[in-house]
Length: 106
Image (cartoon, rainbow, N blue to C red):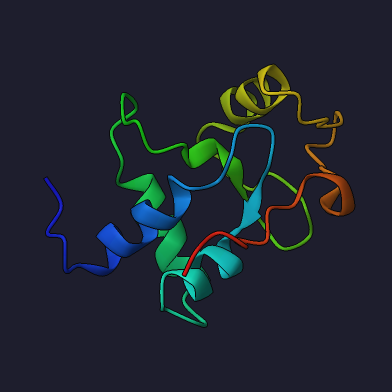
């Protein structure tokens, strides 16, 4: 279990709010978690998750709108496609269409 006061817990709380069919960038997740400028920390936190985690790690992409997870890119693409997110063969997602800005996060 993650310490509720840890940066990872704050990151996971934000990622859990990303709705199905939407994506968010590492940098935006960091900012919403109160960790501006810590996009890499978001990547580390998501990489630390167990595969069976309920945290929807697959909804987090890079600022260019591309899947950058070299460890599970095909799985991430498949999960996003299953949720209705269009991901092209180069792993690119249209941020104008699918970006979640975190409007419901306080």
